[in-house]
Amino acid sequence: MSSWDAILLGIIQGFTEFLPVSSSGHLELGKAILGDTSVPEESLLFTVVLHFATALSTIVVFRKDIVTIIGGLLQFKWNEETQFVFKIGISMLPAAIIGLLFEEQLEALFGGDVAFVGAMLIITAILLFLADRSRNTGKPVTYFDAFIIGVSQAVAMLPGISRSGATISTSVLLGNDKGKAARFSFLMVVPLIFGKIAKDILSGDLSTESTNFTVLSLGFIAAFICGLIACTWMISLVKKSKLRYFSIYCIIVGLLAIILSFV
Image 1 (tube, rainbow, N blue to C red):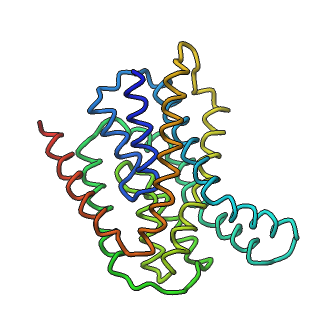
Image 2: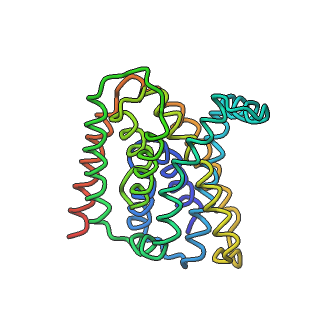
């Protein structure tokens, strides 16, 4: 993988992790277009580095919220911050269970099946369209909502289903405030990303032999900077009900991916 390929994939990851267009789907399409010939261990290491970069950008954007949450937890009371963390924990359960029980099956889907990615992008488009038509409310995320949103996050482990798109759309369709839905969606994924990174490191599947650290660094920087921009932008777009534009985009890319699979 060249430096320019790393930067391009970093940009794709940074933007698509937060914008509702599926980061995993676009990374698969990007690797297919660029003809990624790296061995599985190297490709996995690069993907982990990009996910770490976007998780870090989330922490930076929501640093004030995170400090407030930590402060609330340290009070050791059943306050709003503690309840929020408990809801985050509930939302993590479906994805954690599915990830542990069906890890091999999920990994098999990331084998460059462009047609499958295209079909999932179209499903993402439908979710975004429905959510965009929903009315904004002041309703907070409940414990039941957190679990259902977590189920959506588990489904979004499929390449082509946008994690942010699925979780935000589900939250909005449940009647939650759009701003609160975006905040919950972005914060709920941080523990899962770090958990997945820790699992990959401890499993020994990551190989650093003959690794080009310059390429990794360029990908990390590109993903981090683009993640900062996309996360801030996405919060504004959700509040203004602008998801329909991403719905159109996902339909176009999904159809192109399906067509590409037959070429």
